[in-house]
Image 1 (tube, each protein chain N blue to C red):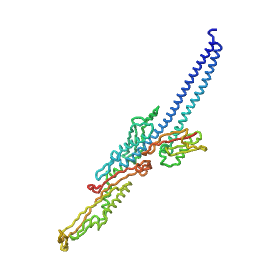
Image 2 (image 1 turned 30 degrees about the vertical axis):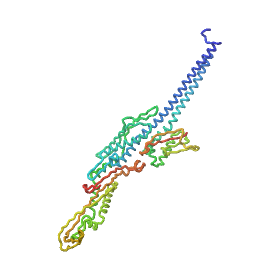
Image 3 (image 1 turned 60 degrees about the horizontal axis):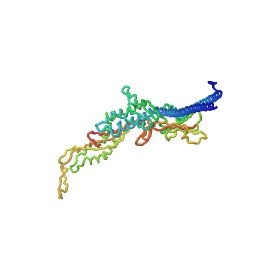
Image 4 (image 1 turned 180 degrees about the vertical axis):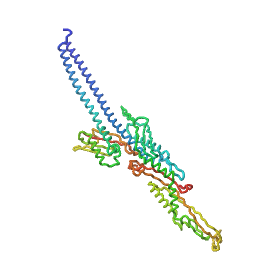
Length: 150
Length: 360
C-alpha cells in the first residue's frame, strides 16, 4: 500500500481545505466591507469641502459668491443670504440636523432642525477654507467654516 | 499510529502557518489601505483648499490693486510718504511721472501681505504690470498682469501641490488713471490757484488799491498804512476771504475738493506826490532834543499825494480729485477700518501771485 494516501489523511486535507475556503470567504467579505468603509471615509471627510467648493463657485446676480462672501461683513443683502441658504440646503440629499456657515466670527447661515440642541460647531462634518477679504492691516485672509451634522 | 499523529500535527501546523500568513497579509494590507485612505482623504481636502485659493487669487489681486490705488492716490501718485512731493512749489512742478510703477510696487506689497496670511502656501516674488490701452488717444482699457517666476506651492507633511498663480485682471477702473491726466492738465500745465489769487486781488475795491489823498501839509502827513486802514478797513482779511471764495469757485467748477492749508498775505505801498514849500503850511512844533525844547518848523506840502497798494498772497492747498460715483471696499489706516470709499488723487500745491515771493 506504499504510495497511496490513507483515507485519514484525505479526511484531514479535506477539512483543511474546507477551513481555508471558509477563511478565504470570510476575508473576502471582510476586505470588501473594509474597502467600502475606506471609500466612505474618503467620501465623508471630503464631503464638506466639496460642498463648500461648489457653493463658492456659484454666481449670484452677475457676481460670484466668493466675492460676495468675502465682503459679507460690509453688505446687508437678505436676498443673497436666502440664495446661499437655498443653495446650501440643495447640496444635502437628506435633511441635516444642523448646518452653520461662518466667516471667522461672522455667522452667515445657521440652521437647526427640530430636536437638535447643540451649537453646530464641533460637528462630524466640517470644512475650513481660506478666503481673501478686502484688504485690512490686521487680517486680510479669513477662514470660511462649514459645519453640519447628518 | 504514531506516524499518523505526527502527520496530522504537521498538516495542522502548516495550516496554521498558512492561515496566520493570510491574516497577517490581509490585516497589514488593511492597515496600509486605511492609511492610504486617510492620506487620500487629506489630499482631496487640500486639493479643494488649493482650488478655492486659486479661485480667490483674482479677487485678492483686484483688492490689492484697489488698496494700492487708494494709497498711492492719497500720496499724489508717489510710492510712499518719504518720497512724496508737492505737485507744485511756485514755478517748480513735480508730477509723479512714474505713478504707474509706484502703483505696481504697492500692488506687489499688498499681494505679499495676502500671501503672508495663508497657511502652507509658498509663492515666489510677484511681478505686476499695469497695461493701459488707448484708442484715438483716449484711454479705453486698463488691465493688470500678475505673474510669478515659479508656480505656487502648497505643502504638507507628505505631499506638495503645484499650480499656476498667474492672472490677468481686466476692467480696472479707467477713470482712476484719467484722474492723473486731468490733474496734470489742471495743476501742472496750468496754475489755476495763482489765477484765483490774481482774480481776487483784481476784484478788490479800487479804494483798497489806489487812494488819492490830495494835498496834505507836511505835519498832517499820515502813513500809507493809516490811510489804507481808514479808507479800506481790514483789507487783508477781506482779501483772504475773497481768495477763499475764488478758490472754492475753482473747486466747484472742476468738481474737486480744495482745502486751503496755509494762506499768507502782504501788501506793499508806493506813494506819488510833489513836495514843495507852501505858505499855508507854516507850523512850529516844540519837541525835546537833548532835554532842551527846540522848535521844528514845517512849511512843506505834499501835492497830489497818491498811495498805490500792491497785494501778494501765497497759498498752500490740498487738492483732491475724487471718483465720486465709484465706491470700493478699501482700508483707510487713518480710520483703521474697511469701508466703502471712493478712489481719489490727492496732492498739495503751493503757489502765489508772484513766484518771486515764497513765504511758505
